[in-house]
Amino acid sequence: MASGECNFGRDGIAGIAVAGFAGAISTGIAQDATRLAVDTNRRFYDSLWSTSYVVPPQRFNTWPLLSALAASASARLEIGPGLRPRLPIADTAFVDISRPALSRLKARGGLAMLGEITALPFPDCSFDLVCAFDIVEHIENDRQSFRELGRVAKDDATVIFSVPLHPARWSAFDALVGHVRRYEPDDLLAILGEHFFVLERSAGFGMQPRSGWLLDFAVWGLAHHRVQAMRWYNGLFLPLGLFLQRRLAWVSGLIDVANVDELLLVCRRDGRHTCKVTAEDVRKESKEAPDMAKEYRG
Image (cartoon, rainbow, N blue to C red):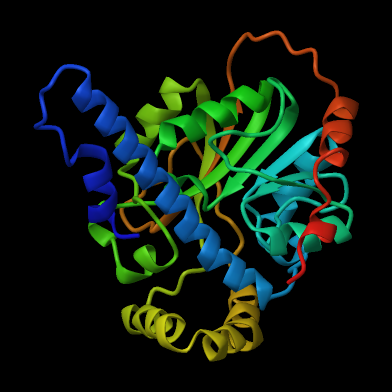
């Protein structure tokens, strides 16, 4: 979805001034835009994951950090992992909009649940560790996403997420993969403060190639020859990208973002809510969710 389409859904009828009527129409159009964004993402990623495979989390440069954090987290959640989970799969709760991805994660011991980041299917204060890699930029109502991240996190829980930066760098690739926005660093810091996240450290992130022509080629291939493009991606570009990953260079607080296309943030959930949910409660609720392996027939 292009950013212009999303902007129309948010602001396109601001000139209507009939009391009550304008608000109702604005809400309806905003909801339609949100649903369109979700449906666009679901179609793209159902297609992607149906022809792909699970990459073990140990293959990613996030593993040294996340494996250590997961070892001391009695309840952990990863949102929108697709088939590229970063947390240990067994006994981690996963929420995704894609049934093909959830089916395969559940087969490997993950607690897989169909859902969206704007309405997570868990009680307040459920998790010690929450991760959302490359997710919030897909969401029209990103404030609601951050509210939900904070809601399900316990006091002092670790919340880790990544986002693309600099709206001026918007490309056809962003539109293809279903991004709604790129973030200005100052706006991102303001959002963290609004939702009681304390930024502890950050690093440059992402496997997106820097070459403009290579990105254009990927967009063209996925748009016109999806099956062949996915074969190339799974057989060559993904293994090559994993091989060429660099160790994450962590900095306390916010790194110098001038030349950073995507940012990885490690935050602490600050707050004083009373948490009465146990890890066993989360496991029970996850296991009672619909059986994705049975529901998906892809």
